[in-house]
Length: 85
Image 1: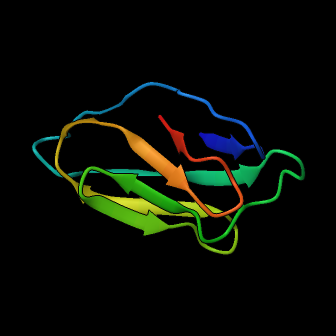
Image 2: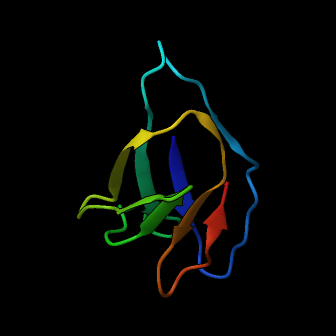
């Protein structure tokens, strides 16, 4: 799934439900892109529960070791609207 952040845009996409596989910790991954250019955005802070990470130079992120449960995932970077899904 790709998340597009537009300048001045605010979108609520709901809550992310992570399902465990045989009791193993869960993970989330994806890409954050600029809505105007379609290019990946580096340095976006991705937060889920007490876990977080930043997008790389291509806009990709991967956060692992998340306990199973219901979470809101937040994406934020200066110059862009913060998005929570």
